[in-house]
Image 1 (tube, rainbow, N blue to C red):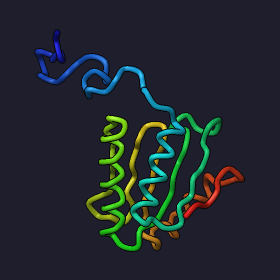
Image 2 (spheres, rainbow, N blue to C red):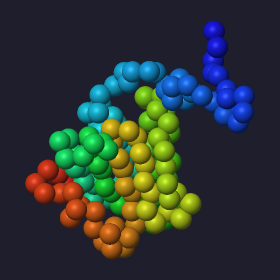
Image 3 (cartoon, rainbow, N blue to C red):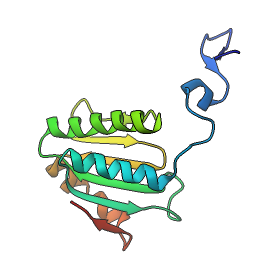
Length: 141
């Protein structure tokens, strides 16, 4: 069995992405199960002003968006790291993350669920909810 193939010119892996990452070719979980795990994780880590937005039928990027705040850069980074770790353990999913270094705004792309973790001042400045909220979200914890 060949675990992966490499391009002889570049030395980079080639072939279907799911095989290269070691992920199953077909997801064994639903977007709703993923959303539930995301919500539980951010609530466990004491994220504030958690907003869940249903994007189904409004965006091809994801089915759901979750926006929440941490009280400090350190908490924002911790919420994000723990979420990525929990998704990897529960779903064998490697979430892509941007912005963790500064801790002002971290974007976690978990495929069907996009998560934004902000410091409160940064969240107020960008106001993502206003862009996506029209009647499709509800506030949690």
